[in-house]
Length: 288
Figure 1 (cartoon, rainbow, N blue to C red):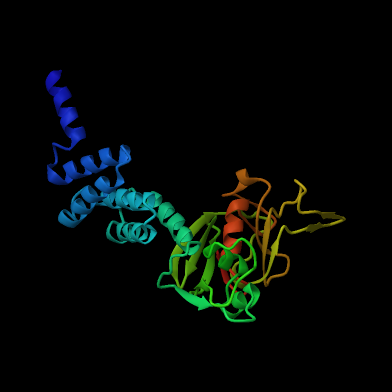
Figure 2 (figure 1 turned 30 degrees about the vertical axis):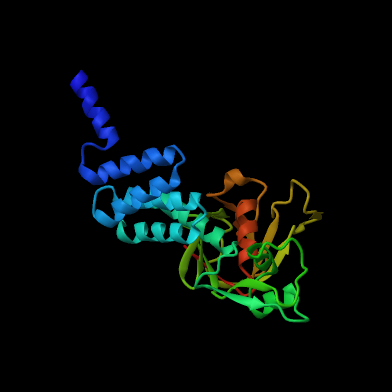
């Protein structure tokens, strides 16, 4: 029994499986202790020295998490992308894609300027509305990316602005919405789509209006935004097929199912995030 116990202990500590396993074990211990710089050093050594080891995908995911924990979002994004590209059969793909999506959105709404952003220097007479319109983005995006609490801006102020083109693909078979920027993955969201007798329309459409706290006009009644019976939730993104759009929900448990009258339904928190990112004119492609 003692021999078996020693083998289990040795395996857990990384003494079996060579240096790569030992590095991963050391990194895991350091990460658990909150010593992120030490965990980072061990993981970076593992990835650089043993890129094809059986633990390389795990190391990439952990290193991304360590970078996130230190607010190194660009570095975290690079690790998650590398894992997805190098290990397409990894059992860690689903978890990695979720983390990558969260990092991508965090980067969008941070002051960090990436290759998909530009910097606008405020000129006399500029307003957030004018700036957002000229760059085909949203006022909400400019506010969030630059930490603005209101609409006041001053000449000479530098503002991060997205220069990429966002687009949306809704896959009805998966009840999933994919957000991309310049055809690069940004994030996926779970959605609800139309019932069998009132299916969500298939095709490519454009966002034609954006309404915060929408009123729901149903037959014989007007349901105000604050009503718990307002099925539109907190945001409405209307497309150029009359009566259809992407909106929030008062029943988040139904997300992931085919339960709507044809619209694409999201949780309120998800649709609020999407609302702040995509402007009028954004392509929305819906596929079976």
